[in-house]
Amino acid sequence: ARRLSCVAFTDVERLVGDAAKNQAAANATNTIYDAKRIIGQRFSDATVQADIKRFPFKVIGDADDKPKIVVEFAGESREFAPEEISAMVLGRMKEISEAFLGKPVDKAVVTVPAYFSDAQRTATKNAGTIAGLEVKRIINEPT
Image (cartoon, rainbow, N blue to C red; front, side, top):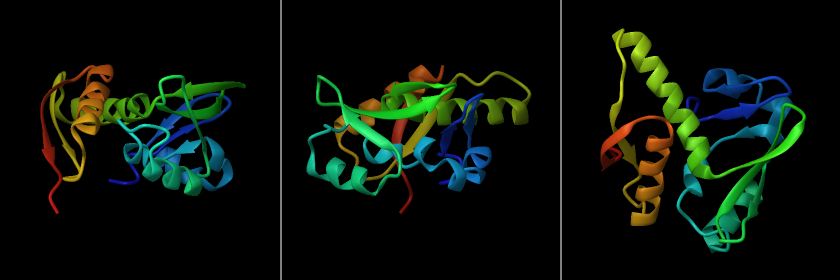
């Protein structure tokens, strides 16, 4: 699942999944992974600060103390909320599902780590909405 949850930005396109993972070494600062580690969290939170120290990509705090991921995309600096990155992943999964099923997919059940807080669960549900999905339930990932 880690491969699929990778999003990369280049001079010309946005890549999700294997295509993003495959170019990560050459484009580390614009290849985003583990966005779920900071979704629904405060930028000032100690765990977020610890996580961003190990990320090769840039994370800043906005005026509301929410983390924003900074990338170079199509020649300009862009900021994305973790929810937006997760929405890109969920959107890609929606496309894959629709191609496989041969019909539109508009509802989903999304799994999250068991330790996710209510704020993280809500942010994940919001990511689904951004991706055009009605998230029917958020359930814990199998351990």
